Image (tube, rainbow, N blue to C red; front, side, top):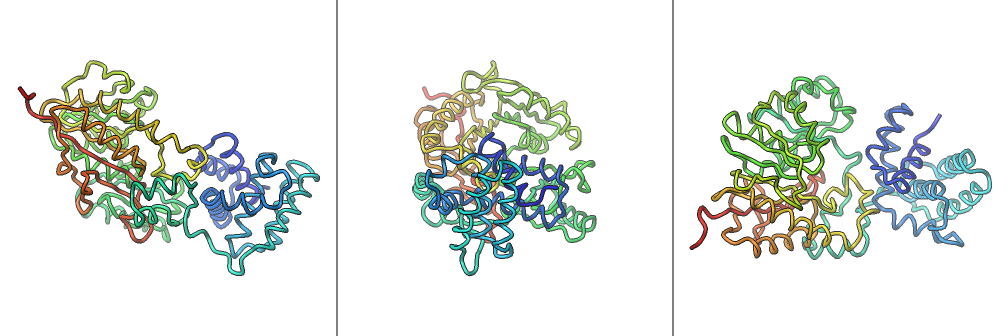
Length: 448
């Protein structure tokens, strides 16, 4: 029977060698292992904590290797990483239990020779154990990213962005009823159905509920009735800030699975329409079923599979509002998806900024005269935010920046016209993913 530490090592091995997403791999392993809640929580803390401070862990055990950490067999390296995290950061786990569990796992999986190496290295790491081990106070970013964050956000916001956040990451619900009392009503219903469930209101979206310990959200009360959608709070805030209004024709560009599409359908009502555009048709095909669960008018929805980096499928000038949540590095999600730090390098923000600029240039042709173009990106970097905004503003004639059109009460745009959403919006440490949002308005008629 697998235990929490072995499960954590196996998940980390998959993340680092197969490119698996930590959350999905963890959920799959927990479903198979059927650990009790305490052990499941320990496995979750080990995996996310390890990924958040990998550079310091690799340095800690790597100092005791003759050939360096990169030469290790991948599963053995995963074991050393999760064991080092426990030894250096978790007070409640006795050192001997950590070492014994790691050695036993390697014996079973890779044999006694490698287990001897693990034993020797971890005993030396254990000798470095602090007198009072504590979870990391901040995510450990590579030097290039730490410098990029300060450049883009300033020291205060960059520090808030990297600061440690509660584990596990919450499941975030978007309450579908827009009445002010609806969020509190759903929260009460969840607590009544699941006594002890941790439910709190979001800091930025007035429709967000942050839920921990919920398990499969499809089993929560209200899901079958369409009372909520699972959507991260920053993504909710972007959708609300876009400001879709009743009766409008809205294009949700780069729509993905349609989280914002359903929000826009609710906003435009029966007199409006929403067109979801995405490169991947299989994603668009899922939106119809979600609309039906949410009791939304599918007659107001259309979907178009199109590569917006190339063209717009003949839809020029049809929309009052076009929202582009552009493909990006995803660095704004790093607390929920710390494995991103293994996959994004210093050249990626600029590379993706070029793609975003090309997509926005095409998306602008979808907007009717007098209409609005909204750009959102789930990254805090300058290249993917201010750099793209500057390039697009310079390239689009007969357009003007329109920060006043961004409708997110309590979170005004910065002086450069860009709305920046992130962990700094919630001093309690439960804030949303980091997004940058900008808006332009097209002139009603071309200049003579």
